[in-house]
Image (cartoon, rainbow, N blue to C red; front, side, top):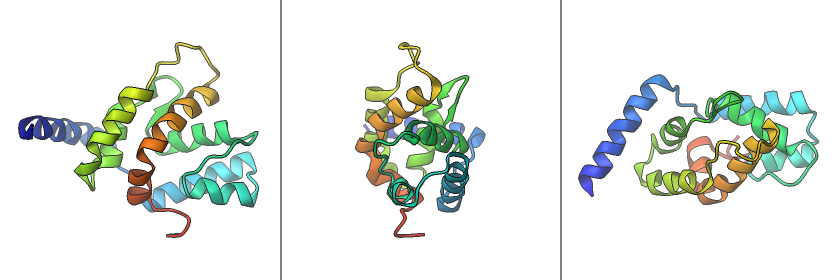
Amino acid sequence: MKLQVFCVLVFVAVAAAKFEVRGPADALKAHEECREEFNIPDEIYEQYLDYTFPEHKRTKCYVKCWVEKMGIFTEKKGYDELAMVAQFTHENTGFLGSVRHGLEKCIDHNEAESDVCTFAHRVFSCWLPLNRHAVRKILGTSKDN
């Protein structure tokens, strides 16, 4: 088990060398830019800052915007699983199990051929409930900003 964790951490370190881990200031900047781009009302935006994404006509594209700006998603390749592992485990390897479990459960390659906003939202909204604790710990929440 220790060897497996070590191998995963080495793998994450290699991935992290290519991926720039973002911090709370980067996350807030991404939120602000996406808010401006999609003209998000205050009451909805406050929920987004807490990593709760309620049903709203702009939520799906907001999520796509945010995950792109965070460097964990591109329209061409979809989610970058290694970047997600690096982003959400770099400060606390204790999150590795839930991050990986969420990826195994939720990642798809848009076999449904959904529009890109729906695709980005579908995967993230599946993964996030399993990892909201890690996201909030690593990136902070509206209460921290």
